[in-house]
Image 1 (spheres, rainbow, N blue to C red):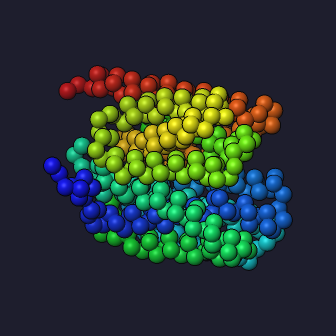
Image 2: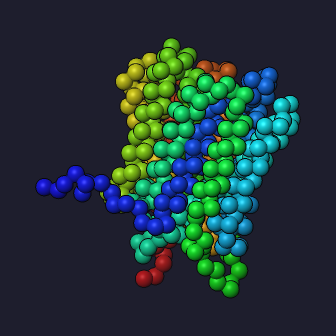
Image 3: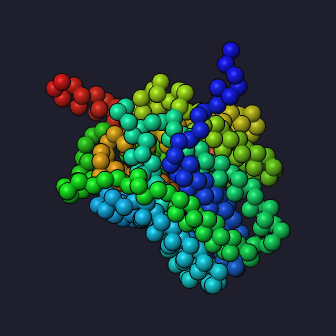
Length: 403
């Protein structure tokens, strides 16, 4: 019989703890800003429409920012240096929030913060994937044990800073944001530059032409529709629950369940992730998401149904993210990988976030919450069809390729 310690994953080898620390501080900064910035904006006297417009800036900056940062990383190979530069931009922008109060200056500084922030993830993910590469591709087990600290940082930040802001007041928000981004910069300085990707003398290959490959085009279409479905949760789930009569503690509990199972998946994925191909995971994810949002729309008044739906977040988000990172590692080789990560952010979270936010709000105003979640279920079903087409395109290419 194995001892309890044998059931735990082995400690992360150097330099992975530095990447885990960066993941923790990055998502902790998001866990502070995303839930509590609207409260600060309201304290400044902004209208709901203005607050929504500022929130939409995050998705808009994800359309342009990540590719620019990814392009720089692919062409210079200095991804760790660029991560530090992006974090410096985060600190400067966050400090500037403390000195602006009117709408347009606040919106401008927030946009600058998002533009700087948008460079961290594609550069970080590319550097980490390069470090975890082996002859079989990406080491999904060790990747999950690094990425899990981002989820831990997010949920810890949401819980801790809610209490801090309640004690200090919302007016302290910009200074706390600056402090968190300073911690992010410190974490970035811990990344070892000795693990930068070594560049050859050949120029970095073009990346956009890879979108013409059927397997790549269908892959990104699947990402778009699957993440589009999730915008119903990210933007409107709490409002939907309040509409159904759930209290704040129940709403918070359902969100906590989703993050808890996400953490569990990332921590343990090394034991089972390889049992399916990444394309297989994409199809499972989209199928589960289709059922999740249909259940949320049709049986949202049943607490146990919502509990099961939120538990499926381990599959619909965590497994989806892990499969996408693995596929980008395969579909965008070498020095095109940073732009592949950027396209994942742009097509998966930028465009879908803008369309889902505005489209979902429009649907709710005209038809109510339930039709919006039915639409999310339909989007997830389209994501399944696209994932299936991507897998078929890969099989056709392998058949045509001589041994």
